Length: 121
Image (cartoon, rainbow, N blue to C red; front, side, top):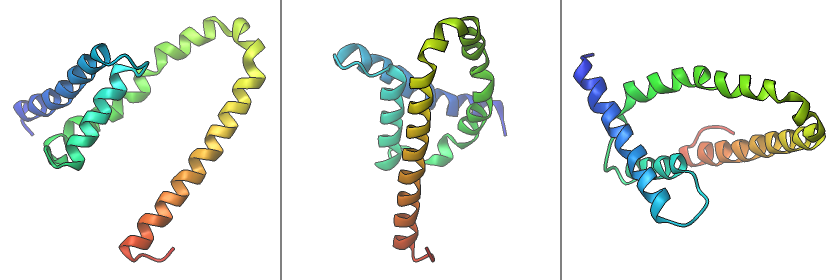
């Protein structure tokens, strides 16, 4: 794998990040720029404007770095733990409900895909 290939792939990903920033500033919805960028990248992949092979290595590398990116926000939360304790019951309820909902939706989507592809459910 050459450095140029990584730069090319990262450039594609950063282009969609930039386009997300542009959309975020142009459209008056309270949607973060990163979400706009991910939606644009998803659409480009679905419409086959870009292929997964064009971003595979760089996206795999960035996904591997994700845990490191959460260290700073977690440390920041720990500094404000006393302020967060009052909200703890609500946060716990939201985490449990969103986890259950995520499991249910993921299960249904998996079953649907497996039925369409002919795999046993």
